[in-house]
Length: 552
Image (tube, rainbow, N blue to C red; front, top):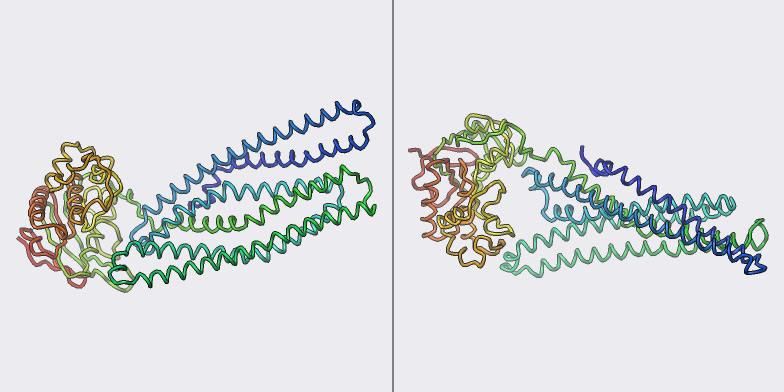
């Protein structure tokens, strides 16, 4: 099963190269203080400057060369790391998007849009930061600590032991405080997600909020989340701040002990140069430790984000495979429900033993009270949900044996409230790139639905970039009609197609529907009697069952 680990494994050799560079740069960084030590040793034994000038020059050149090499390798390391991280983050976002866009309606209905957006943006960015910056930092720190300890053992085993024993203080502090930091970090992520969801809900329902004058109540709820976030952040940084003095005291304790031992003569063979090296290594030892301590939050964020994205990647059972089944280039338009049972929630039937037939070229009205099951029937025809039992047949073939891609390619669904994308008018009508309709034909379609008079007033005509707020509800319905005509399918489904338009536009669209029904099957969900005039068949939905009340 696809997960973050399997995606990272594809880049293992590229990241191995980066690790090798880390080892080399760590070795060079440990060597540099030894070069300074040599210069100090020469200075201690100076008798004549002329005698050591060439040696000093050699040391300076060696130091500069190693510094340049180290800087170059650091550059290569960061460039390679950035490139690898970029590619990996792109692939993670692509795979996550492929999964999310393929979720069945059950999964979507149980997930808040704000949650999905947070995961697709903030969480994937956190993973990129984790892989590209935090994890390498921890690996580099670990390598450097090992190298420094190894060199300290070579200098004096007791110095190394003192560093290890005293550093245990930091380890204990990290274990104690780290659990609290992890707790507060997790609570912060959870609270932020709640806040995002609440903001999304508030902005989506702003008209209702204003209409019922509940702005104050909503603000109080947001204030509550803000206060929780403030308290969590304060507690987190209070805990994190406690690590700094512990780190400083530990470092100074080690230096004090070693200097004391040297002054007391407890350690033999120690000169000024060696003391410089030891103090340098102690400083270098605590630098990566500091990185580990202060970026612990980012580490936890990365781990949490990886788990959240893994959850998305592993919802394979919730993915509808639109390509599974036989390809049907052209459906005739025959639809049959045979003893279909369906429920959104187990134990609560929405449709019960539903049986009906719609024949090729028929114009059928689907009527019934709100909540009777009309929309559910349409959702099943479109393959948004799986039936519990029974059969749905297209042209005599079981729906499960035909790819959803083929079914949806042959169906145009005109919604009550169609969505308008932030794109050109043309792209909003010809949504599928495979449709190569000409501009002239597109303009003719706009004239058929009565939308051309508005479009021609735009500066760029059909190439004008629009958004959802650019049109009224009625105009959106007209645009949806244009989409349906442009798609040229064998089955058309209209959900209250004239609910938001005036009488003149309604009469015009009735003509459009009549023209479409000459060569295609038409299904109309309707409440208004005028909408179902001149239909071939009326199917009434009552309490999850379908009865035929009219047929020519």
